[in-house]
Image (cartoon, rainbow, N blue to C red; front, side, top):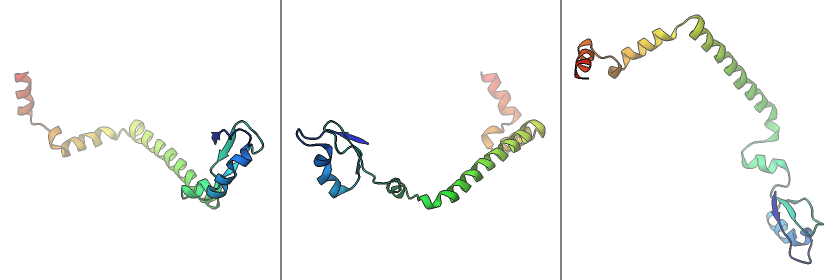
Length: 117
């Protein structure tokens, strides 16, 4: 809603009529003389169209939302199982450390760093 005030002596309908005829939209309180309530969308589908959405896709979108929720729910349980039941992460972390050159220092390098510190 965009509030605006009509010119003195005109109501909102008279004041906004030329604008709405040219650009479209909806005026909620066309009889008032104080504050006009203008919306640039005539119906909600006008807004959805700008966002490349459609009311006709509501069931598809509803299904996609449930797929997203179920995947996250399952991923939570898999993560819990791998972390606290199977305790697989220590072996994964050690494997990653072996693959990254900066994380695997030789004993000689570590000893040299301790001496210089």
